[in-house]
Length: 249
Length: 94
Image (tube, rainbow over all chains, first blue to last red; front, side):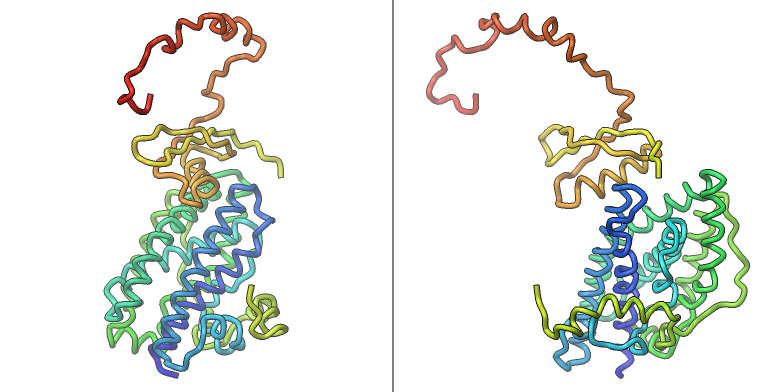
């Protein structure tokens, strides 16, 4: 596969899988207002993935539709980071996962504004308005949970402990990212990592939370080696298109 | 889960030149969160360009039991309505 197609699919899969994960909260949010906040963010992310799938399809030139790319690939072809496929857990886990991702996503898309691909620049510009809000939303929640009650603080600390090992992958480039950074299509993840760490330090400080030592990190998702959770997500998400091929609504 | 967060009243201005209008209420831990919740609950279909949130406890409402004393006396004072003037044809939007 062409490395630029792989790179765009990686961006699209991150958005799609996290969007799918957040959609599981629909009807289960702790309060109505947060139920809507999470499903709004979910819809933003799915919308971003649609634009990116379209771009990937254009670059590939095989005439595939967004639906083909979203619903008819198998797990090993998905290039999303392990972080976004982790289960929702409790509200604190969902918030911490979202915050780690939003902080990365925000700076990543800021850098994509300088991509040499015009369509990707346009997608980044449109998405950033949404992502800026996502980051504000998840940051405010990290602060309130961290600096909230004894229980909320404990839950958010546990969430950080269980998700921290998935944050390293965000900044460990694989072949198609190295190539994309070199060609000017993509971004230099080393720079993003510095900005991400500043963001996390700032918010954790306000929340009275400690940033863990870097430690040992999981990776593999970007190259298709996923945790066991992705299979279940795909089974859920792809069921309809696979049972009724070409079905529309 | 018991929701013991305070209640907030939400006002939305739909476009420049119009006033903020009460659209409903919601629960939130503080003003900043109330603002975010209002954005998610009340502006997701492009309903507005400005939001006010006001803690419900800061609103003093008239008591329905006082309705007679407050409002009925105005009913028989028709001269307070500007209905006795003949308006020129050219005058619009009155």
